Image (cartoon, rainbow, N blue to C red; front, side, top):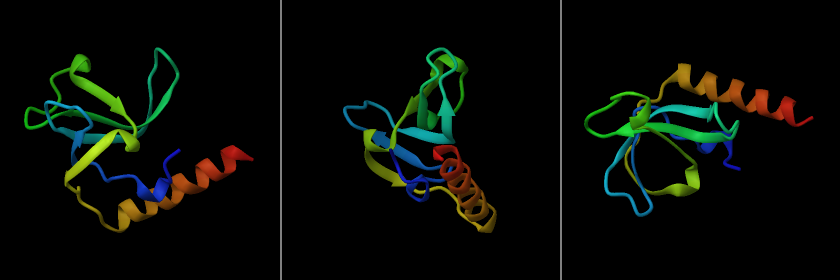
Length: 93
């Protein structure tokens, strides 16, 4: 499982292993509603963006081969990550 503090910010552009297209991260810690499996990220094709549910891809941090661009980070994101860490720590207890 990926450490919460290692999660990339939304807006990050990544290449997955064996991918033919780059993806842009638009969400973190997402659950697939059909399988109930949690993933580190949800992304859409770059540069097109969100073209609908069928163009959204869930993946984990270890699936990333290369980070092309790291998304925007500020104090709001820092607080979000800290709260997310607390949530997962309390859920493990």
